Image 1 (cartoon, rainbow, N blue to C red):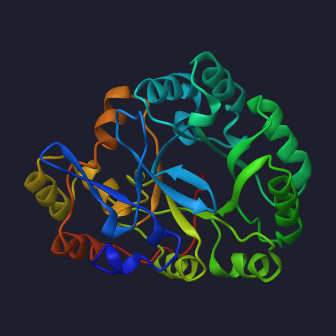
Image 2: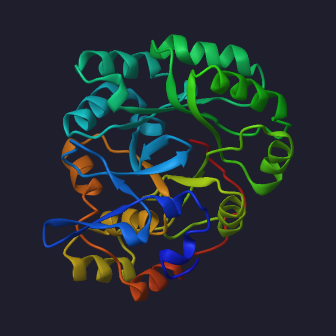
Amino acid sequence: LCSSFLCHLTSPRLASLTAMVAFSGHIATAAALGLFTLASADPLNIPKMEIAPGIEMPVLSIGTGGLETSAAKAIVTDWLSLGAKGIDTALVYKDQQVVGEVIRSMNISRKELFITTKIPGCHLAKATVELDFKLLGMDYVDLMLIHFPQNSSCTEAWSVLEDYHAQGKIGAIGVSNFKAADLEPILAMAKVKPAVNQIQHNVLRHDDATIAFCQKHGIAIEAYSPLGRSNHSGDITGNAVIKAIAASHNVSTYQIALKWIVQHGHLVTFQSSSQKHQASDADIFSFNLTDAELQRLDSLQEQPEEEVSIQI
């Protein structure tokens, strides 16, 4: 990975955005960086990134999958109560009905929220899209992803998503857990290119080849499991380099891990069932990593990520 945030701006659309950088508690516009635009009326000050023409996505979204599924109601309620707007769910999480109910109960305009959902794979795409809408109780979602490629061609499923996009029922379409070989057939036939590839990505484990391919084709990277996984993605909280950098900024190791991703120009979906932890983890826009710190963190890759062994 490149040590400088600016050298990752390979997509023209990123260059048209504005970054918000906080210094000593005062928010200053850093338009020259051309990265993010600050979300309005958002106490957490979570910036947005344009992922497709006219579609702006919060840089941070809360996820409801994996071990957090059973707590989806509390997770979404707490996150929205903090003023955050991005929610990440999927059919396989089996919590979409709960997510939809919470959203409707919060008295928040649907237009203020950004809902990401995922159909399980490339088979029966139309049926799973319809089920997705039905369970959420919505007729529009901001971003819909194909959750994983299932070792098969996804061109037919992609055409289905393009149809819903053309009808205005989906704001942007993308994929998750796709490698370059999975993306190439879609790019060869797509009328609408994937806006996002959501992949497992953290400071100790990152698939640089997939990231480079996506950047080359203007596909935004969204990290899941950005704080690692037990026995799978390294020990972020115990890493001496991360701890030292965290201490120098008077923040947590988790904040450093999330900031590293965002400062490289990527999106993040993370999980937390604690509102206190949601707020503290998301508080990453009051400081910036230096180029030297980014370079040190870039070098922490423990081993190449060969395959996604657990899909979220």
